[in-house]
Image (cartoon, rainbow, N blue to C red):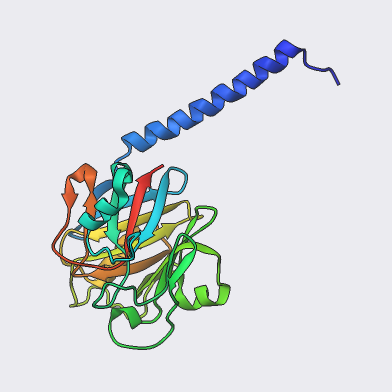
Length: 259
């Protein structure tokens, strides 16, 4: 096989470097120009959709500050983030909690389990089985699994939050949902599409039923699995929209930042 001359080898190395820089620049440019959150209309309702891209974004789940205190608001989260707050694309409440703001189901932050998986029965939306877990693995891919499936697989999650009910399971709506039931609140949730490279965090702009909310994830966003995060207290921090909801105290939060 013919060997490359030194200057040929140097040229090939330079081309590889330039191509790599161009790819990184293209990704950075896309991160700067693609809106973090956009509005959608569906079946007469409006929704704000905030996208997480595993190749572009950093995801964190937050419940406590470095001093151990519960962070109950976006204002407290912003202060806790410090300089990193400038990189925030969006944040939402991300799971149900008790009166002290502590998660009532599984909560894993940066690989450390702070609250165990709950498979118990009980009242309220959290216990409307099947409920589920939103989680991210060490490879950056994101997932929504039923709580039973998560318990059986016990994946090595870096970040995880449990909530309920599931909105979609393998493309099917939760079996207890009516097409457009009478229970209507401002709601938020998360859905995952395809191979887990993208997740969609959604908050309704008004009162919606479980059925319509689930169909939005399936029919408008193409998600096969989606999880309800909460209702009534649903809140969004979206710097690009100049929005930081402060109407409620809540528990766990998800924050997505530019890398």
